[in-house]
Length: 422
Image (cartoon, rainbow, N blue to C red; front, top):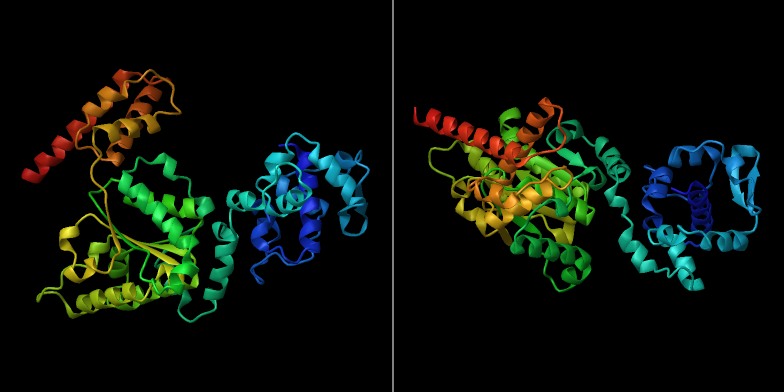
């Protein structure tokens, strides 16, 4: 990082944001926005001042005065150690001449708007908006909403029911997954639905954004849901229905209502309901009245939530679709299959898993030997091969390492089958 260039970007951004009230908080690049974010106001309030302390916190840089001493357009106010631009136009001319300026402007909507009007740096405001992350992607945004929820009655119990992740905190991206064509299409459609929410609301098409992921364990249902959160910059709320019923026995229906209510308070977001079959199972005569009430409450909650109206993308996942109540299926606009990977997909998964590991590996052979393996199983194989290699202090894998790991995994599976038979 060119520290001087980054510092001038910061001061230019602050000055332009202060002057032009048409800019909103999403026009500030995420690293600047996160520092100046006000949880109380849920925005970056004006005016924005840049001090030596701000520079230290954002970039981890000391000695700012010495660093910028040779720039004639930079001034320091003694009170508060504020950094100012004495000649704005001169600062802009210096900035555009620097080799990294175009890259910074490409992710900074405030600066791209200004330089686009000036016809400089091939700047595009719309392009920078797409490249930057919105406020909803940050932990600061989520925490400011949770602060509101914390003041409500029963909030402590409500927050115990879920795991909440900011998109910025999710490491796995869609590029890390091997998806089917149908799965890729579904992500694209959801992205468009979010982009055209007002249009869909206007034409009355509001029952959109309820997905049911179906497939065996380890086929990527949770991974894809989390990757969608990162891709679409939506906070991720995860709930396991088994936790709701086990940990809060007797209050299952109430806890379902709390979970869906919380998702609306954190909108826009993804509500991911795992182990969906745990509650949404067939209602039979021998089921308890409490569980029947829970199923009815869950169905009602699904009916009353909408991506278009509420900004909540509902994704549910089950390993046991045969257990689901018949009334569940028609409440989802899309059923997404997650089957065990075929030969081509297994090879692609191995290619991704091995991309940062040294070694001459024939992934075609590995794929042929791992029929009926899930993606999760393939990761277990790789982990075993890596750890075995480290026992001999090797960080380069061989084909034999992987073949041995597959043989070990097969043996483990056979032992499980034997135990089941016994």
